[in-house]
Length: 117
Image (tube, rainbow, N blue to C red; front, side):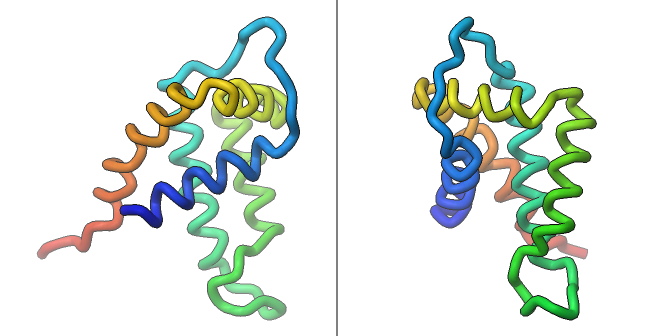
């Protein structure tokens, strides 16, 4: 479970590495952000499974990951910049970011459980 939190927080901070304030207070609402972050988490995990003859197993395939991000942003009808601004907003409002991460953890844990036949 702690690995999930570390992964989610790492993604959040990697994506929000640029400092900036959301001047108007506009950001992606929490419910939508949870869905986006779940898809990003899945894309990050899947990109490590995509086989490439030039990369070792378990290493993220940057090309496929870039495509996944583009698809995710298109699906949610947002731009990379809007996502980045929202991540900056959440970074400056840690209680809201914690809420997003805490709501994702049970969903991700459930996905990781082995299927019983």
